[in-house]
Image (cartoon, rainbow, N blue to C red; front, top):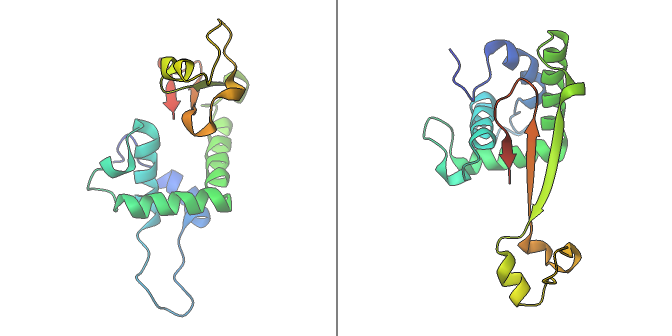
Length: 154
């Protein structure tokens, strides 16, 4: 039985051809960690919002999961896998993409500090162009009618 943040056997059958790691052609180096357990670790991080170093021991080391997550994002494999899962849910009638929305908000870590430093005006309308990019964090909130709570990614 799969846990909350783990893919089922049926889901993995769809994702395996997309996310499976391949050994080096020369056979050197360590064999790659199981892609399914790495994906489950990545899903745990994305679902809980925890830091990578807080990953439970039942998953591969957080460095492995983070590195593979970056590889999947850069290569487009993660987007392809998520699209494939969404299409399957849509065919089963369990996902209606027309009723979903994504809300994005920019938030400065400490608004008063930026105002005191003159980085932002103290008027009622903030000028986010003057806040240094490294001091902003992007918060995504995703909701859909079947969900009772919002999910946030920072």
